[in-house]
Image 1 (cartoon, rainbow, N blue to C red):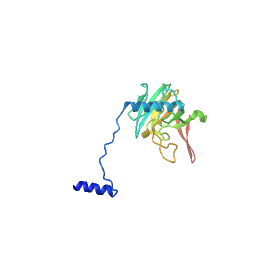
Image 2: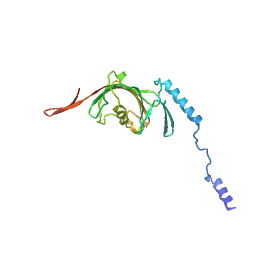
Image 3: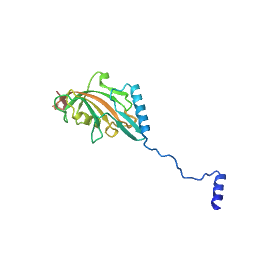
Image 4: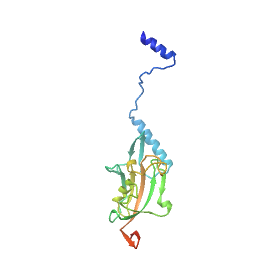
Length: 197
């Protein structure tokens, strides 16, 4: 009786009692994953993504990367595939690498390209001038090699309003390593610089 009168009072006064919710919980439905994969592929086709581009199935904050079997996944989370290996020695800290790249976001949209800029990039290894995942990806390449590098957010670029990247997502780079050069510090009076040849 007391419960009924309390419930009647709460409802008539506009205060609604809290009832337990028995809503549906999200279950891992293979149909949903297949639908998301098809949607991802459609968007990639619209963006003219390259062949065998990885797919990203994003549900909330979790992302599943779907790649063909010829991709290698490292313990760091980096995923890569060699198109051609190249010849010569791999770059070491202090050496300058010259490379071309095309950068893509998860939807396969091109975000940057040295081919379009008209000149390759040159960076010294081990100076923290590159995104950590990018440096790890080219560290064991050989000159003439071509590789696709899939960088997870934790190895990716800084994120924020003052940077080019606006959200935590995977970045994909197609890289062609052109050259590796030794570098030496040169000092003339009070002037000092690094020369690579």
